[in-house]
Length: 292
Image 1 (cartoon, rainbow, N blue to C red):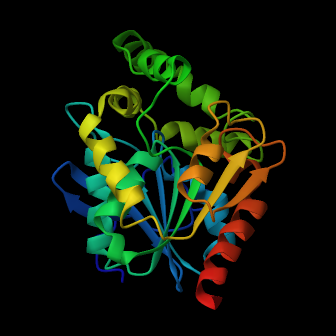
Image 2 (image 1 turned 90 degrees about the vertical axis):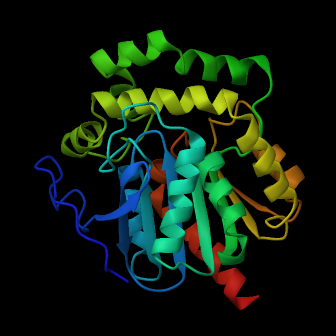
């Protein structure tokens, strides 16, 4: 279903880097950018913070077997910028709007980072459309503990936000081999950074701030995880060196039957560290669902 208007490709995003068109979905936060490629069981990829370019290498491997849909959260990537910092609830609402607008059914949610709260919120609100879940280095519960809350407070603070808006440190660090750039060339890294302009950097830090404060969102998430989503098959994928807050054991406690995959030598972006392993893990997860 490709009836949405196509977004003009910016000069910094060549087809060699992102070989698919991007579509515009109208939303109360403004235009939400959606990539919809391939045919087959739908996979909905949700990342909140930077933008959908983090999924590129996994999409390249899955597009021939699945319908792959990515969403740029409000304020990021090719989505419209916002006057005020967006919230995770707005991101979750945008994801739900994509599910409705593209008429996705029997979908598998694949969520990363702050896409966990936003994506699982949308999944809980559209549980009748969700067949399976995959949590990629993400959480979906109230942040607890001094380390976790302190990190969110620091990253969501006004000084961090404005400093990054001025100098773009977070996108530059994220683009290194310790972030998304392990297998990327300099041109790919430049494209990634170009999608995170000054306003997008402010939005990124705004999402960090909201992640520490969103009481109502976490209450709704808890009800969803323990209610309509509790019987959905779950796959977790984490980098070997990036689970200091022990999210995987928390996921296992919530979903005892979950399958857990660890990317050897992986950090916070396992889909960039080892796209072959992540793609095959998602493929097996969905195929087991349909064969079972």
